[in-house]
Image (cartoon, rainbow, N blue to C red):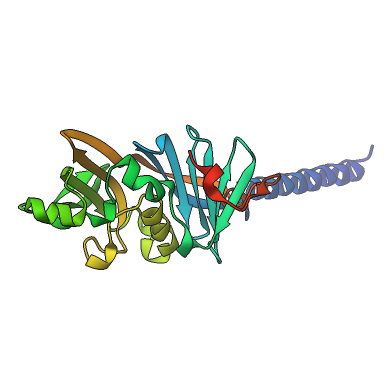
Length: 252
């Protein structure tokens, strides 16, 4: 092999190696790039006397997923219509309604389960306190109500009630842009009448408890808040589910 031929071969090898390096670099960038079908969300780990534990609530501007493995229910909704699909994982059936018509099982059974309707509890603002690293607003049941007033409100059995809310859980997930999520939470947990102005309708509920007959009961408790990435498909009705006309069979 002549010197000229050797140099030509050497140049070809260098060129091939360079192309291979560029190809590998491009592949690495492609692998590192986020999938267009994945979205960043917040996930709340919660519990409830009625819905059991753990409850997982994942949400973002594209939709939400509420999961209660203990009762075999998943509830999903996706933007832009936010139609709510309540899915029974045990029977592979679902029932759907517009968001404004959704009523959680807690609302349907409140009078029997709690012995009262939660929205009838009058709240007043108390001193803020911290929960999970967040500065939360605290609302407690109005004190000094007479027996006649308690009876008129239908809450004679309630000795105390407390509700904790937060203005925002994370700046990239502004609750102002996730109002359907707040609407769902209020309807799912049968929370107090926001028309009273206490609390503000843009506050996210994190915790609520009531004390009846000397016993404290957890309506809602949040134990963890984390950032996650999930596929957009989790906000949609899973394949293979059959629609039913009545939501009675979807009860826990």
